[in-house]
Image (cartoon, rainbow, N blue to C red; front, side, top):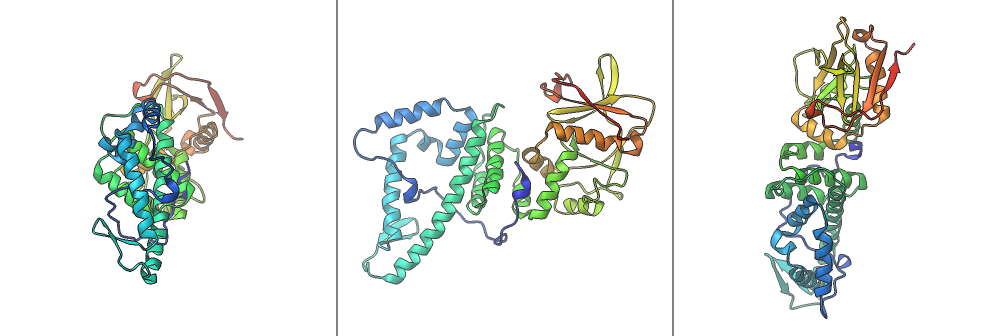
Amino acid sequence: ICIAHIWKSKTQDRPYNNWSSLAMSQSDIHIPVTGDITPIAKGVQTNLDALPKGTNKLFDTFFGKKHAESWRYQMLVAAQTNHDVNLVSTGKARFEKGEINLLDNESDSTQRSLSGLIKDKHDEELNNLVSCMKEAIKDSINRTDTSDDNNISTKFFSRWRNEAIHISEKEEQEIWGKVLSEENQKQGSFSLFTLDILRNLDKRTAALFNEICNYIIFEDLCILNDNNEISERITSKELFKLTDIGLLKASPTPIRTSTKLPTITIDGKENYFADIHPYLVFFEKNNEDTSVLYTKLTTSGQELYRIARHITENTARNLCTYLLNMKSFSSINKIYYTEYKTPMTTNSYTFISVKDVLRPE
């Protein structure tokens, strides 16, 4: 998923709306309300029982646990909502203070026109919300990690929902769906502050952050070159912009800090290594100073990095070349990389296929 598709809309200063419930538009409702609905309910129940734990938690978040487990209740509410929406959209009723009030004068054309505008806006926001919810469910179903036992907090979901109703672009909906799915898997994965940063990212800054994700090791260290930047395009000035918006940590001048990489023993030899999950980059330790320059992601930067990164074999190869071009790596002629399976927290990696990158001539 590319976070570069997320940018500030023209209504970035929009106030949060207080939605107390999730309604469905007429086009979304295709539920039979006559005859025996028991087979339908049982079929839905059977299918949902086979879903991952995290996905079921999302349904509980969207619809409420009690209602999510009561299929008859959901169908009746949907049918009643459909009827009420038709009354309001045709100007025959008015929705005020949580109640549907029938109008005495159905010929009030002004009221019908206003109702139509309200319905169009409501439908647009509802479609955006449903699309973001679908992306969250899709991501949840495809996850292989185990969800915790905590549901998403009401406050977080309310804030997420208030933004999701304005997200109309497909790529943006994927990102916001991913955010909710991550939070659903582990409560506290995202802070409300991070949501604010995400909603205020302009297109250029989002593209910049997406690019530096290729130079992040150990989840939070952004490797810099000898000029305290990443490339001719990603200069120190650009990095300071990411600091200003809260994605990179503010540090003393210069922006970077120097450190040696940790070591790992491979085939009986000690090697320096860097983890860019799911790849490991390493080279044999020598007596030369092979320190790297870096700046660190903030907590919000780390949270967005987890959903923005797209690490491939090409990413690993490019990082090897990037390191070999640094002055501190002048004594290193070859760097290895490999995809691995075992989580890095065990410090015991299972290598898949080790390859090498030679120093550019």
